[in-house]
Amino acid sequence: MKKVVRFLSFTSLTCFTLFISINSYGQEKKVVNLEEAISLGVNHSNQIKLDSLNFKIADVKLSQSKSNQLPQVTASASYIRISDNITPFSVAFPTGNVVLNPQILNQSYNAVQARQLIWAGGKLRNANKIAELDKKAVDFDIATSKNDVSYQIASIYYNLYATKQTKKIIEANIELLNNQKNDANNYVKQGVILENEVLKIDLAISNLETNLSDIENTILFFKNNLSILTGLNKTIDILEELPSNPVQELSLDNAVSNALKNRSEIKGLSVREEQATIAKKITNSNYLPTLSGIGSYNYDQPNMRVFPNQETFTGTWYAGVSLNWNLTDVFTNKNKIKESKFSIDKVNTSINQVKEGIQIEVNADYNNFQLAKQKIEIAKKAVTQATENFRVEQNKFNANNTTATDFLNANALLVNAKINLTTAISNADLAHKKLLKSIN
Image (tube, rainbow, N blue to C red; front, side, top):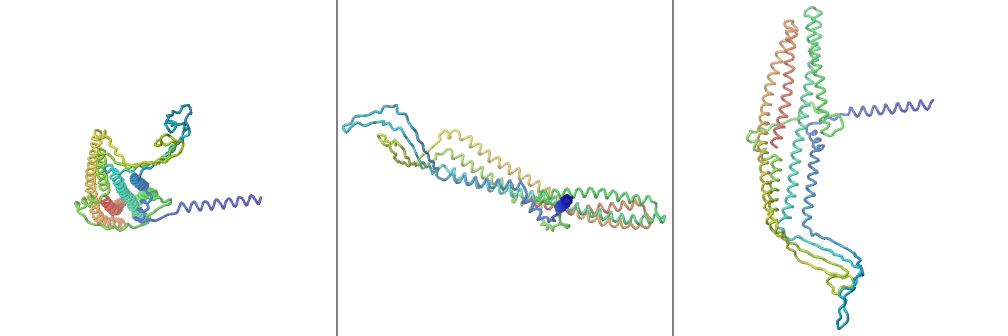
């Protein structure tokens, strides 16, 4: 019985400890600022990891291309056993009979050969340039991905901030209406107002609580997305204040000009254009012959340079140059030349297309940012007006000179004005981030 009690006690303690550990892990929270969130997102981004792998692949291909300039060395060895059913042929000389085809049944042929390309019309040099430019182009792809990830994180961050501020405004308003309802209940007891007026306030509170529930779900949605994109296996939260966002005023023309100069997409395509131009040079070199240095060391039994053949290993070597010219390419290479020209035209057209898209994007983002700044001023004015209107209606309601409906309408206008101002500030900062993204 004591063993059973001990077992149950141990099991209960273990389960309790496990529950506490899981509960603590589930409640673990990390508060991050915008820059930290962006840094975590960039480090975690699978797209950037893929781009980085492409960069490593390009680096390996460059090494492979450079290795093509090294001498090509091959080694071969063979052993054969031939049949003995051939009668040797001999010729009589004054010094004696000479066997022209002696029976050498065990034969072995071994060689080490080397070939070094001396000149190929610049093919290897240009191939190395293409490989180097490929690394450069992938590097610009990484920069583009980092820019995209940074804005994606910033978008979630600012939307989460605006939603949390909205929650605070609604919670504060629920508290205000609850206090007003308590006062209204006292007025009902005094016979100053009807009970129906209190029900209207109660209904308004219920509607706000419903909205609050939706807002909490939205906050959880943004937090989960932020946790996923930053790679943190814990609840994540943000600072209660927006980060400082110094604004550098630019004209639209300057913004477009900077974007066309800075955008990594254009830089990457310019590199691709250079690659296509070099590829055309390689295609042109197909019209030219190639010159190589060659050499070989042979260690054979029998060695064909020894006459008559002898059943001994003999080492011999040769060295020289080799000129190769594929004459068929003189007639067939013209189609490859056309393909190279089309490739260059294709890249140039892509560059023009991207430039047009960037101009449209910057124009839209610039105007959106200007509009967002205007909305802040409008929202501030609306808050001032709604605050004064609510103050007047609240005083009237307390003095029983107006209905609960008018009071609640004034309250709703004030709440919406505050929410609009918070949203406008957040949207303006995010619009500025979007403009910076389109410029850089």
